Amino acid sequence: MANLWNGPALKKAEAAKKKAWTNFLNHFPKADKSRFVSQGSVDEKNNVTAEVFFKESEDSFQSVFGSDRKYWSAEMKEALGLGDSGGFPYQLSPLVQNFLCPSLRYLLTAKRQA
Image (tube, one colour):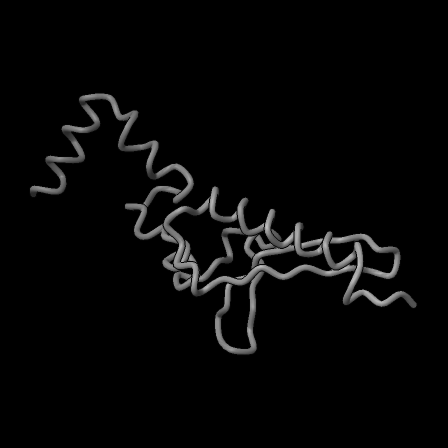
């Protein structure tokens, strides 16, 4: 078995971790970075994979991109910087405010003031 702690496999794993972290920051720029960790792995055929995990507790991690978003906890959504979406799917919440027609904006404003 090859020594994975030095050599091209380790360099590939570090590059994959960095790429996963960069993709994560591009998807979630408001995320609390202290609550997430990027981890890389190398299998027996030297295939390299990397993933970003949410640190729920000291011994509990949840995959960010490998888990179904509808099962994310409120704590994870808050750490990702998604916050309250006002009842809309959080993926669409920034779009909703930008693309509402004037009559819908009026109705939403009137509803909030009532």
